[in-house]
Image (cartoon, rainbow, N blue to C red; front, side, top):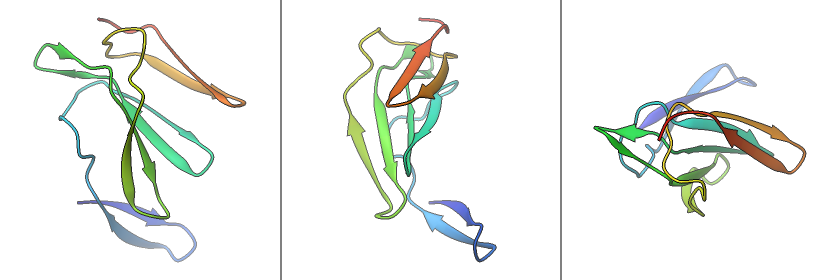
Length: 90
């Protein structure tokens, strides 16, 4: 489990770990009320997976894989309804 700070009450709440392979140099971004994490590197294996965290339900859901091939150390940002991923290494 991991923890998140509840700013309204200034308390910590335990949250479930990401149910995926451990990774280094992933991307992470938020969209709406959800948080996303994906891509990255694990011992030379580059990843394409993307996971969504729903803070209300406290659940992780795997989303469509990144179509650009495995990548780590990438940059990511959100404009409007789109998340943009670029740079990094494969």
